[in-house]
Image (cartoon, rainbow, N blue to C red; front, side, top):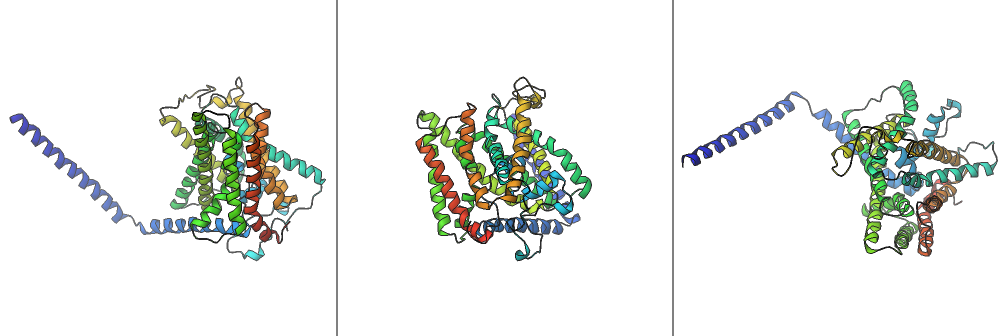
Length: 444
C-alpha cells in the first residue's frame, strides 16, 4: 500500500511539472508576441498569398486568352525548374546577348497595358538561316527532350530518389557560372520573409513533381509517363470547371478525347502483362498524373516570386534547395541506402563514376537535354507559328517511345497505343487551338 501511495504521489508531481512547463512555454510565446510586432509579418504573408491566388487566376485566364504556354512540354520545367514563359529570358541570360539584341519577353512588365505587349509572333527575329535548318534544329530539340526519360532509364540499378539527386546536382553545377554572373550584375534578391517562404514552397512542389515522375518511370512505360506527366494543359481545363470558369466547347471535347487516348495507351502498354504488373502500371500512370498536378502547383507558386530575381539565379537556387530536400529524403528513408562516397548505386558522389557511365549520362542530361533542348525551343519560338511548336511538343510521348525502343529501354506501342497517342495529340490540340487563334490574331 505504501508503494502505491509512493508511486501515486510521484505521478501527481509529474503532472504538476508538466502543467508548469506547459505554462512556461505558453508564457514564452505570449512574451515574444508582445515584444515583436507581428502585424507587418502577417500583412506580408497576406499580400504574398494574394499574389499566389492572382497568379493562379492568371494561369487559367492565360490559357483562355492564348497568352500562356500551358501546352509547352514540361520536360524543361521538370529538368530545370524553368517557367515556360521564361524560356526566352533564359536564352537571353544564357547567351548574354547585348541589350540591343535581347530576346522578346513573353511576359509584360507589371502595370503595362495588355495591348502594348506585342506577341512573340509579331516580334519574330528575321531569319538569316534557311528554314530547313531551323526545322532541323527544332526537331533536334524535340529529340533532346524526348530522350530525357530514356537517359534516366540508363542509370540502371539506381533508385528514382538517387537519380533525382544526381540530376539536380549536375544541373545546378552547370548553371552556377550563369547564376554568379547574374548575381554580380543584379545583386542578391531582396525577398521578404514571406517571399523566401514562397520560394521554399515552390522548391518543395518542384521536388515532388520531379520525384513522382521519376518514380512513375519505375512502374509504367516511358511513353505513358510522358503523356500523363505533360497533361498540365488538360488539368488546367478541369480546374476551370471546378472553379466555375466558362470553357470553350472545343476545350471540353479535347479533354475527353485526350484522356480517352491516355486510357487507351495505359491499356495497350499492359496488353500482355500479368495482373500484378498491370496494377503497377496503373499506379505508375497515377503517379505521373500527380506529377503534372504538382507541376501546375509549382508554376503557380513560382510565378509569385520569380519576378523578384533573375531566371538563372532562380532556377539554380530551386535545383540546389531541391537537391537538399532529396538528400534529406534519402537520409531518413529506411528503404534507401546512402553513402557519402562515389559508389555508382547509392553514393552521394556516384554521379562522377565512369565505369557504369554515370558521368556521361548525367552530362548528357545536364547539357544536351537541359541546354540543347531548351535553346532549340527558344529558336523555334522565333521562327515558327505556335501551332507548329504545339504539335512538336505533343509528339514527344511517341518520340520518347521510339527512342526507348531503339535504345532497348522499352517497347513500341501496339495498335491501341498508336490510336491512344493520336487521340492525345488531337485532344490536346482541341484544348489549345481556340486560344491560339486569340493570341495570334487568327487561326494558322
